[in-house]
Image (cartoon, rainbow, N blue to C red; front, side):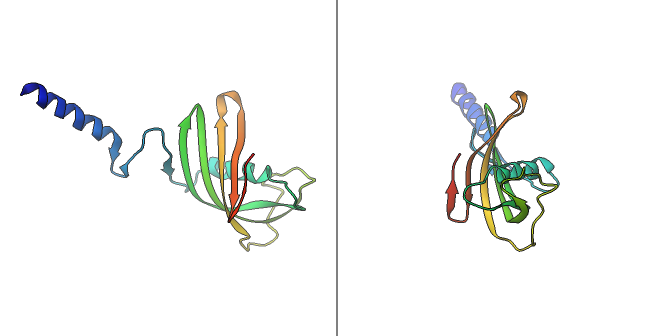
Length: 138
């Protein structure tokens, strides 16, 4: 009887590790983050936009980051949702958030990008990019 009490205690402790005030968490899954004031999320969204040249004349630029989720792997996956507008920079130029300002504040689309970041190796890449119904994976 004592061994079943110990087993139940261990099971409850393990369950307590995975359930928080925010609700259940999937170990290894994406975790929602607060976007307020986090410049890294904005920087990563601009990085993703700057990689999208495709068949366009002007880069898009980020107006607002609206949602972020992170997943710890051998580095971090950032799934970032943001609003975009067409910028003043042609795709033949280098994209920077400081120089590529929006032509207007009108929202062109809402996009979601997954950026894989390994800061200790100085590696960053866009693994998927989707705006509205259009997807581009790199």
